Length: 240
Ligand SMILES: Nc1nc2c(ncn2[C@@H]2O[C@H](COP(=O)(O)OP(=O)(O)OP(=O)(O)O)[C@@H](O)[C@H]2O)c(=O)[nH]1
Ligand SMILES: [Mg+2]
Image 1 (cartoon, protein in one colour):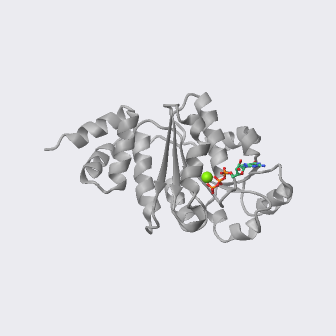
Image 2 (spheres, helix red, strand yellow):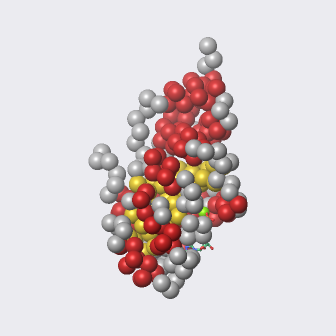
């Protein structure tokens, strides 16, 4: 009987960052010992608030995640961030970009950041990301923030994984309202009109209010609107 998976699971449960990282890699690669360690974690109660953040490229998802992570750190919570990259031509640069923008948290042991490439496999987001969420949850990360680009199936799959889904749009990125009618709005619990410092933000908010119960405005780099977003997310936590 191989004891390595049991030990790995134990280290994950103890919050060992390297074990978390290693297990996610094993699971991504479909390694049997990864599956075995994961199986041992499945009985761990799921506690984390899982937040899906989706929206079109460049809307400001990563900037917003960065601000959310900073705010949660001030509350002394361990934050997990999964940036899902579908490696489509549209999002090919996402991994590097996310890493660079997240460097502020690189030295912080309380923030775990991982880019996940689903490499275009159908359903890949749900499988690999769902398993990574389980690992982070078992290791005590709460909240777990998952960034996906809302240009395909990803936002639908993230709906199945997240307790709350935030759709991020920006005014002036084209016909975002029409585009959102096509799918993003169906999966979103709330919509954030980011880049509210840009022209057209007010009109975007008004148009969206007809479609979703909650529309917030943010200027992510300045942290404007962040307290309202944090409150909206907290309201969706399960009662303890
Ligand atoms: N003026 C303004 N710029 C912003 C705002 N939020 C983000 N940006 C800028 O918009 C650009 C894109 O922001 P990101 O956070 O990378 O957007 P993203 O949605 O994560 O992009 P992808 O991951 O590539 O889809 C960056 O240059 C940000 O600095 C905002 O509220 N106002
Ligand atoms: Mg991004």
